[in-house]
Image (cartoon, rainbow, N blue to C red):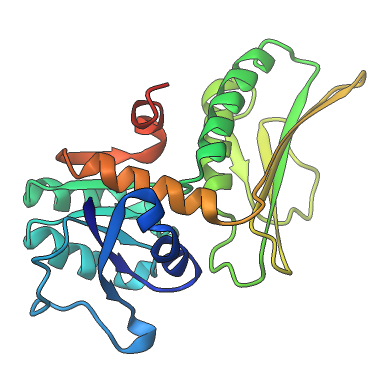
Length: 247
């Protein structure tokens, strides 16, 4: 049974804790700044193999340094810091440890990424179709657009040659043909909805992923921690998803 520590004890942290034993892992440490239980260089981490971090970008690198320096591994679900991915990768290699970064650990969403990848390659040659998207999340989500929306946009831009830049903000002008518009909505208690549409003068095709709850995200993070416990290196979850599930 893998011994896991949690950084952040909000909704995701609590859910991972709740389902941990049913998924053959044991939560042995919990650090939550909101409860004044802060990870520090003096913290005893001897009973942890892998940490799962769903906290805030502001604390992420300081916590990662402590964890990696103590020869522990790290699964990162925190978003809103990806402009510093290179810095995190360097930190991982500095301490010869293991890190997995995921903007979305949902099993279904990562299957959705594969579907979008295939569909966008197909529509690359169908010039009558325009492509765009939108996402919805609960009112408490800290970042906009979501890390998932950015990942979906990146997949589309990589595959559809006529789209070269993503626009996530409100536009007070006509959108340019080369722009991919991906809008965000925040409100209520929505766990997460992501839509991609391919529209032509003849018909519209819609791809949709709707999270019913956060359990799929929690299970994905736990499975990532199990996989990482036997490995070193810096990984993006989307790149190793099929390997984790032997697809």
